[in-house]
Image 1 (cartoon, one colour):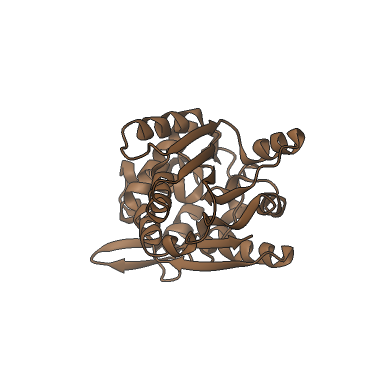
Image 2: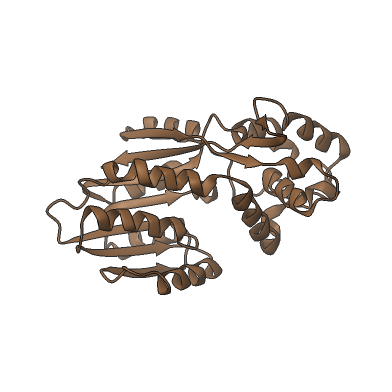
Amino acid sequence: MASSMRSLFSDHSRYVESFRRFLSSSTEHQCMQEFMDQKLPGIIARIGDTKSEIKILSIGGGAGEIDLQILSKVQAQYPGIHINNEVVEPSGEQIAKYKELVAKTSNLENIKFVWHKETSSEYQNRITEKKEIQKWDFIHMIQMLYYVKDIPATLKFFHSLLATNAKILIILVSGTSGWDKLWKKYRSRLPQYDLCQYVTSSDLSQMLDKLGIKYECYDLLSTMDISDCFIDGNENGDLLWDFLTETCNFNTTAPPDLKAEIMKDLQESEFSIKKEGKVLFNNNLSFIVVEA
């Protein structure tokens, strides 16, 4: 690996911008919206039965767009019930955006929001030390398990916090996605970052099976338009390269042979499909619902 290559996570503003480009180039949020509309109402149908308040815990809630979709479905299922929504999110920047979104969104009167600026493991340590274990009716962990050091221990801990009829919703990339193949083939040749793990739904299923935890898994199709990656000097393409490889300035720092190899692979059918002149990377998502 060339010494000039460094992890994308070492440059926060570059990471944020490349992530923004990923979202605008992919159907990630549309895919999540489809799940929230079609599947979530059935999943949360009993979480608030016989309860005067519904307690929801968001782990890695980000800027809150998906959180508010989830809350609107809970409100529709349980009109007028009080909802206590606590958010664990390590980025102050994201929490500020989340608060802005809440401030300009209507119909949130029956929801109490509390934000904790910490990682999931910091939250786990704090709660364990206080010995005040609160039970939750719905916990969601959306695209965040990559940033957890000990995933089985994290799953076991949050599963222990589930109340009667409660569920955990985990969203992460599918074992059938292009990410799975990209990570398996190239991880040893790309910069390593100890705060990020390559994990897909296939890995997660094995962990849950080993823990003896019951779950259901739904896969939804999603794509990312990476056509700009094949245009020299294209700024959007450069940022998408960074996101794909988790490498800062991949296009200018990667060894030419590595770049050529990945570029060739990304156009193969196991990674992407070609449609109407575009190259669409397989960004399939898995929605894993864990039962109490």
